[in-house]
Amino acid sequence: MKVALLSDVHANLVALEAVLAAAGTVDAIWVMGDTVGYGPDPSDVLALLRERDAVMVAGNHDLAAATGEGLDMFNGHAAAAVKRHRSWLSAEERDALAALPLTREVDRFTLCHGSLRDPIWEYVVAPSQAHATLRIASTPHCCNGHTHVPAVFRDAGTRTTIVPIEVGRPIALDASCLVNPGSVGQPRDGDPDASYALLDTAATTVTFARARYDVAKTQERIRARGLPAILADRLSSGF
Image (cartoon, rainbow, N blue to C red; front, side, top):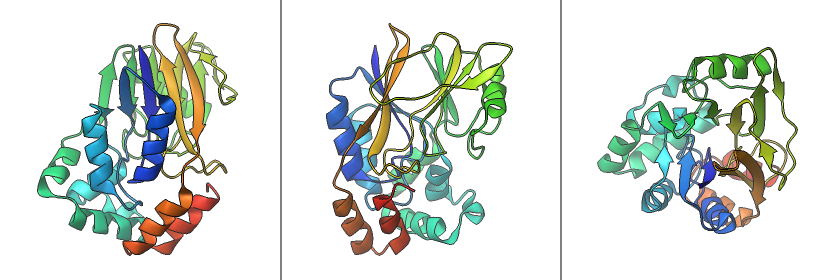
């Protein structure tokens, strides 16, 4: 099975459309949270993912937009965007976001936004954090997001290491691994191109990819909808 791994789309419809076009034909789409927040088009992004039967879990922005949960933990710009999204989304859309599971098992993978210790808020940036999640999991592998930075952590039992990533080069998931595809809509690794990954469950490999999209178009939409200007400006640098 060929799976498109996405995370942190953040209401960036232009980036999502570019990623889905670049990914081509896939058997499934798995989304590791934060489908809304920051960007200009939350409803359109939700509709497109629903149309594609995407498997989704909740992120902190999703829950804040749905119910206000955790809003006090956001910085001013993020909180302002979430409040706008709450007013733009229909009751049905907010209910759908609120109903998203915190974790989900699919095939040999457990999906979450942050970690299995804290599915909503923990940023997994160190091997020790990845090890903790993989020890909790009842599946061999996990997929997460939240950091907006693509990463693979490999746990060989005695030691967890960071696996070097090269775009377009398949990585063998030959031990227990935690895979973060990076961010579709708000990359923060210094590359403004939308980040995603393609999982081959038969070969047990993951291949990271980037999709170039019309950043200026999304920036225009952010400003036109009255969202904080910094949310548009930062897209140019990928930070």
